[in-house]
Image 1 (spheres, helix red, strand yellow):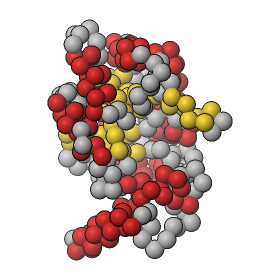
Image 2: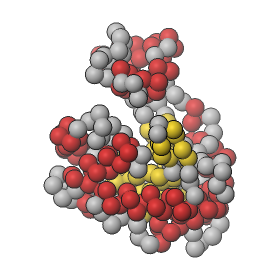
Image 3: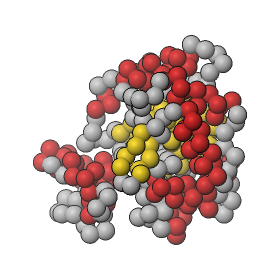
Image 4: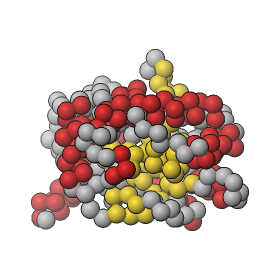
Length: 259
């Protein structure tokens, strides 16, 4: 599998990353191991998770695979912090105190001393940006994170955060920005990709298969074992089941069959 540099850093990531949002909840340990083994056999080296995935269970599953399925130094692991769900309510807290606390918990669940990329999961309107970025500095300088990044930021937010970090050699340089990008959602083309490129950040696309819709599995309805049928995922799938998306999916299916 092709390897690409993450932004202007020396970190090489496989072109395809393995997302683990369902691990430990909808995907059990054995199935997760099978997915990971297939990914590694195909030449992949990049696994993406977050503290909030399965309330930490995704990280625990990955931690169980380290040393049994792969060597720690052979795989780049990225995780995120700043979003949590308390009693089903989505809460954003990108304060220095909360982020560092979440990072230490993530490392404990993963059973490793460091992550290759640590990202702020989303912008926090209620926390000063300098407070948020200081947590990245701490993680970077203490070796808890080899590289740091941001996720789900708008174009101006990316530019502001990156500029603050680049303007001071004592601060941790941002390496990556993560955002949703697929044939069914191309909003990042408006300004986010340009901002990332101008700031020298690598772009990590999440949901490149439009949350599974581009696989074609929903062409004739909603399979009972799909995320579209799961109460906690259905609302995320529904926006991509409209007529416009269906036309794009059909075009992709025709092209795939032709190949």
